[in-house]
Length: 610
Image (cartoon, rainbow, N blue to C red):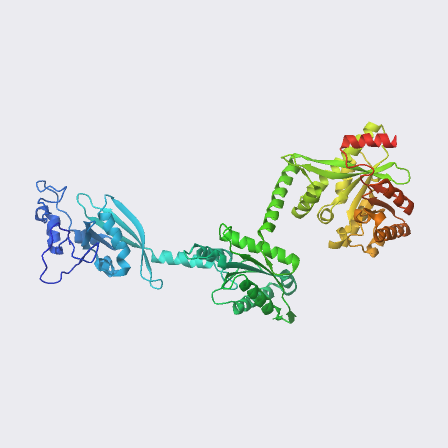
C-alpha cells in the first residue's frame, strides 16, 4: 500500500490491506494494491501524484534507472519480520510486508487493537519527524504469552517510506528473566534472598501511592544456629532453616513479604495497618511459633531468635538504609534479649564510633598517640616506686580524646592489638631513656595495661620479651596490669600466658579488683603479685562505712594471700594516711600527681626520689 496526499474514494469492497492513522476517524490516505505497487516501484512514472501534482520529491522521471527489485520481493529476502511503511504525522500504511511478518501476526499492526497502540504511536511519530533511524524495544502480549522484539525503523533513500523490522528477543529475555529469578531466590528455602528482598522493597518504595510511614522491615536472626551446624551437621541446619521458614510463613499476613537475607537471618517487609503495634504483634507471633520445639534427628531443640525492627521514615534514603537499620536493631536485640526498634540516635552514636575508629587507625599509622605517666607511690615512705603508662590521643582538630571513649572502640575494632604493642615499646624506650639520664637504674618500674583482647589474640610474652631485648631492660622493671574480665573468655589460655610473663621476671597486677569476675579460686591459682583496689571503692571512702568495709576486706584477703595492694583514686592526704594505716601498700591518684608527660614525669622522679 502507499500513502497518497488526496482523500481516497470509498472502495467498492474492503481492500486486502488496511491503513492506520493517528486516530480512528477517516484518514487522509488511499490504498494501492500490491500489484500496482510492484509496477510503480519498477516504473516511477506510474506513481500516483501527490497533492499539488508532480511525482514524489526526490524522484526523476527523466532519469533512467536500472530495474528495481519489487518491494514485496525484496522484503521477502529478509530473514526477520519486516515491512515497508509510508505516511506522516497524520497516519501510516503498510506498503509491503514479508511472510515472516504475517506469520508473526504483526499485520494486525494497522488495526485498532490496544496491544499495538504503543508501536503505532512510535511509527507515526517517526514518519512525521526528520529522523533517519529509530530503535526501541517493544513488548507484545500479556505476561504469560508475552513476546519481546527489538524494533528498527529506517528511512528509505529518496522518499518518505521506511522499513520496519522486528528481531524476536523472546528467548533471550526469558533466559535473562530465569537467571535473574535464580539470582534473586534462595535455593534452599525458595524465598527471595538478600538481593531479592532489597529489590522488592525498592519496588514498594517506588510506587506512586507508597506511604513509607506505613512500612516496616523486621529482621530475625536465629540464636546459636552455628551450634546446631557444628553439633548436628549442615544437613540438620538446612532442615532447621526450611522448617523455620515454613513456620514464619504460617504466622505472617497475606500482604507481608518474607525473605531469607542471610545464613540464619530472615527479613520481613510489613505493611502497617494499625501503626507500630502491628509490628509488635507480628514479632510476638513469630516468637510463639519458634518456641515450639524442633525435632531434628534424635534431638529436640528449642530455637530462640533476636528481632530488630526498622520503621519507615522520610529520613531513609533508600531500601538499603531500611534494611541496614533493621540489622542494626537486631545487633542491639542480641545484647538485650528483647525485640528492639531502630533508634536514629543510637545509629548516630555508632557512626561517631566508626569515625573515631577511622581516625584512631590513622593516628596509629602516623604515630600521633603518646603516653603520659602517673606515679605510684609507697604510702609508708612517699617515694615513687613506679609510673603507670597511660595512652593519650589528640586528634587532628586538636581535641584531646578521652581514653574512656577511644579504648573501647580500639578493643571492639581490634586496634587494641597494635595500640598495645606500641604502648609496650614506647614505655620501654622511655624507661631506658630515664636510666641513661639517671646514669644507672633509676629505681622505678613501668606499669603497662594489657587488654583482655590482647591476651586472647596476641602473643603477649613474645611481644614483652622483644621490647625488653630491644631496650636492654630486665623483666623486673615492668608491672603488667590486667583486669578480671580477661579471665572469662579463655581462662586456661590467660593463665598460661601469665605464667609465661612471670617467667620473664615481670610483676603481675590485677587491675580494678572487686568490679569484675572476682573468682577467688582463680585468684589463688594465678601468679598475681599486686591487687589494685578500684577507685569506685576508694573515692568517698571516708564518708561511707560500706566502702571502708569492702576496702578492709580486700586488704585482708591480699594479706592472707601474700599480695601487695595499690589503691587508685587517692585525692587527699587524709585518704592516703587512712589507707596506709589500714595496711595498703601503694597509692595512686591526683594527690600524688596527675598523669604527666615524659619530661615532667622524670623531673618529678628526680625531685621525689633524689
